[in-house]
Structure formats: C-alpha cells, structure tokens
Length: 131
Image 1: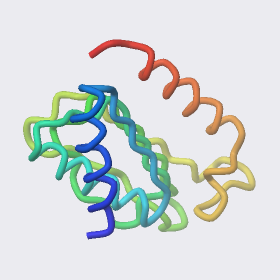
Image 2: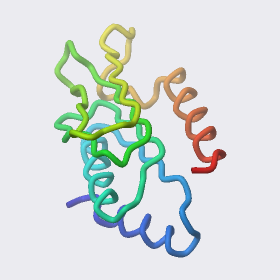
Image 3: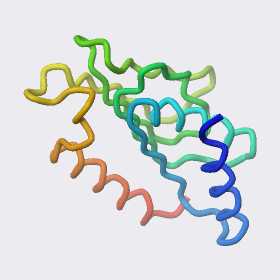
Image 4: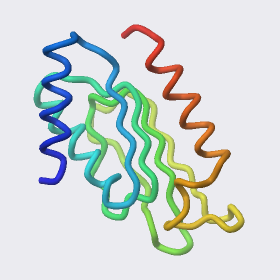
C-alpha cells in the first residue's frame, strides 16, 4: 500500500521524539491513502489529531483513532465522496460539499486560499496543544 513509508516515518518519529501530534492531509488518491495510513496507525496504537481529506475518490471508513477529520468533496460532479466513520468513532467528522464554490473543483481545491488558510490555522492550533 502506498502509505507504508508514511506509516514507517511516523512510527520512527514517535519512537525518536515521543508522542507528538499526528496530522494527515491528502488530496484525491492521497486522501484515500491517508485514511488507510490512519487505519494502520490505529493498529499500532497511534492517534491522529487532525486529518483533512480533499476530494477523496474512494474513501474507506474513518478509523476510531482520529480526533478531528474534515473531508472536502464535490457532490455534484462525482469527484470526491463523503467519508463515514467506523463503528466506535468518537472524534469529530465533518463532510463539506464544495460543489457550489465558484471556480473550485477536484483538480484545484487544494489551491483555494480560504480553504488553505482554514487548514493552516487548524494545523497550527492542533500542533500547539498537548494531547
């Protein structure tokens, strides 16, 4: 699976530096991959503090080790789908339909400045708090 090296890097960093916040962000196929990464991290007892999926095209269910997940997708053009939680999920999960956002679509959603700013603000907030 494509995310194997990501998982290995996170596990190695957690061993070296201790439990630090894990934040995952992915677009399209990368969004699908980071959900699988989170699932593998769950099996290793590692929590994901914050995850952003942008237009995940074939997402698996969100594993229970995610504290906050925001999924941006496009309902009207079929590029990207909602993400649903696995049984036992207790985090925050929000699916945001971007279909009505003018001039934004699957291929440029990650370039949309308001979305970039929101994600960056959240990343800064989640890495600065202890868990």
